[in-house]
Structures are given as C-alpha cells and as structure tokens.
Image (cartoon, rainbow, N blue to C red; front, side, top):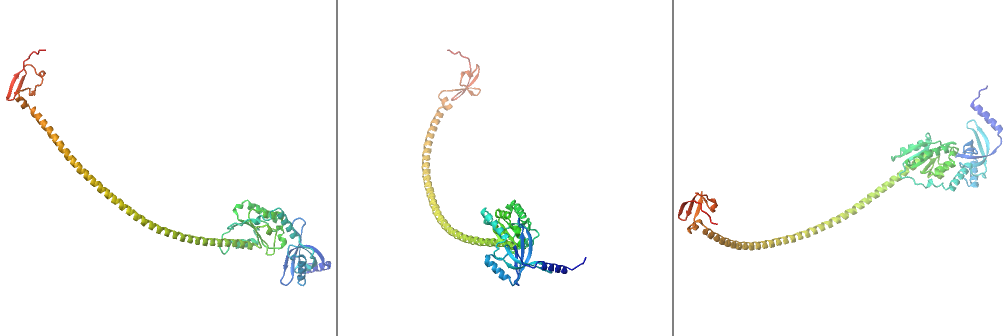
Length: 437
C-alpha cells in the first residue's frame, strides 16, 4: 500500500469534493454561533438538532466573505427585524469548500430573510409562554435577596474554568469579605444538563435554610453547547425554587431560558462574583451610613440629654438651696419652740417644786406636831405604867425564880417568892388555900 502525506490526502479530498459538489445548495439550519471578524469576515457555526430533545445531530462551520457579509446582514435585519445572531433558524445558500489546513466548511453565498426565528429561539418562546400561562414565571424573580448575601450554593462543573474564576474572585476579593460557598456538581453540557442541574437543586432544597442564594454558572462556548439549558423542566424548577437563583452562563453574547426566570441574570461567572462582592459593598456602605447616623443621633441625643441634665442640675441646686433654707428656718422655729417649751416646762416645774416644797414643809410641820402629840401621850402612858409608879401606889411584884408571877397556876406549894415593894423586897412562902366556888 502506498503511503502518502496528510497534505496529499487533504488535496485528494479537496479535489474529490470540488468535482462532486459543483453547485450551490439551499440549506435550513440554526446559527449556534456568529463571530464577525475585524477584517469583515463572519464565521458561523451551524447546527441541526434532533427532532426530540435539544442535542445536535449535525454541525458545520461556515464563513461569509467580507465582500458580501455587510450586505447580507443588513438585508436580513431590515427584512425580519431580527438581529443576525446566534439562536435563530436561517435558510442559507452555501457552497461546499475544503481547505488542506482548515478542513471542511461551507461558504455562504446568500440568505433567505423569510426564514425567521430558529428552533432554539422558538423553543425558548414556547417554554416562557408555558411558564407564564402557569403563573410561575415571576416567582423566583420576586424573591428578595438576603442581606447580607454570603452563603452561596454553587451549581457548576468542578473542572470548569468559569467555576475556578468565580471562586478565585470571590475568595480573594480586595475588601476581604468572607463568603461561604459550596459546589453542588452538575453536568453543564450535553443531553443530561437539565436533569443534572435539577438533581443539584433538589440537594440544595433539602438544606435550604443553610443558604442565601443559588448560583448557576458556566463558562462560555458555542451556543450549541448551551442547548441543554433550553429545557422546560429545568426552567420550571428554577422559576419555583424557594431560594433566589443567580445565573451567569456563557459570555456577554449568550442567553438561555434561565436568564428569563432566574432572580438575577448576569453574563459570566466572574460577573456573578463581582455582583456578590458589590452587594457586600452596598451592605458595607449602608452599615457605614447607619453607623454615621447612629453616631450623629447619639451625639445629638447626648448633647440634648446633657442640656437636660444641666438644666435639672441647676434646678436641683436651686431647689436644694431653697429646701435647705426652708429646712433651716423650720429647724430654727422648732428650736425656738423647743427652747420656749423647755423654759415653760422648767418654769412650771420650778413653780410646782416650790409649791411642792411648801406643801411638804407644811405637811412635815403638821406631821411633826401630830407625832410630838403622840409621843407626849405615849410618854404620859409610859410614865403612868412605870413599875416604880405602880409600886408607889401600893402595888407589889411577885417573882418566882426571877420571873414575874402573873397567874396562881404558876405556883406550887412551898414555892419561895420574892415580893418587891416600893421601898424594898420580902420573901414569901406559898401555902395552899381552898377556893370557894
């Protein structure tokens, strides 16, 4: 078998295609990417999707040369009112071309303006119309973003460059804001895109209280790579999700159905990070403004309170002086009343003492006179009953063993008595005598 070079093979393919495809062809396709160049060319990516689903079944690159592109675009846009951009379905007149370096491509010769919206745009319109009829299209957009917006659940591919840029910008923001974010991995391209993102949303919904918002991000690419986002179930889940959803899918030129149902739509993952940082800037500015307002109010309040306290202090000093003066006068009056009362009591007591002294003197004199009279009577009684006096009147005293005999029962026969008379004593012997009854 003969061995040939790649160039020789590509030359054979070019020659074969040139011989086989000599005519131009009208084709229907969808523009998945439109890239005008600075030199006036326009490079296209054409896509045809399967009847069911949004996966492409045919793709091809195309080019419109600079000598006809401005005229074709102007004609198309004036006739349709539609920008010549990705996402529209078009009918093109093309010629098959092959380059040894760039390979197979189509050269666009003409465009039919009557062929309007492409299937991707029509599908998006149908999805949005259905969500509007169901009354759910504005649910997520009506949710208020949390303040502060710091706890972020991220749906993206772990290996996507857009996710890395997002994390790097968020974690190394110049202001030093602290964000808490966690990746919920999902497939971001292909037929399983919608189901994968819905599964990630279900995981987040199970712990919704831990998050302030959901971020769905993907870096840019061909428009056909974003076809997985044009899905009703995905759009319905996002529209009715209980947390605000922020999307940043693709480049500035890319738009998906999620941009119309999400709470906030931004162009790129880094734009989402910038938005979150800007929200924190707003919070910081508002907090600073509130701090200034609180400080101003506090200063005003303190100044007002200081004036009130000074006024109260002056009033208190005035009232205290008046109170002390009044109290001093009251004490002086009480002192004078006490002194006067004490003098009056002392005078009354002195008069009472004088009266009592006089009464005592009179009483003592009367008592002494009475006592003297009693003593005189007692003295006369004592003198009258004096034994010597009695003896001088003829009485005598009989004593037995030195004791006065006052009863005959005290005597026994032959007892010797000493009988005392006024002028002497005599002995007497007791003799029995009969007693006549």
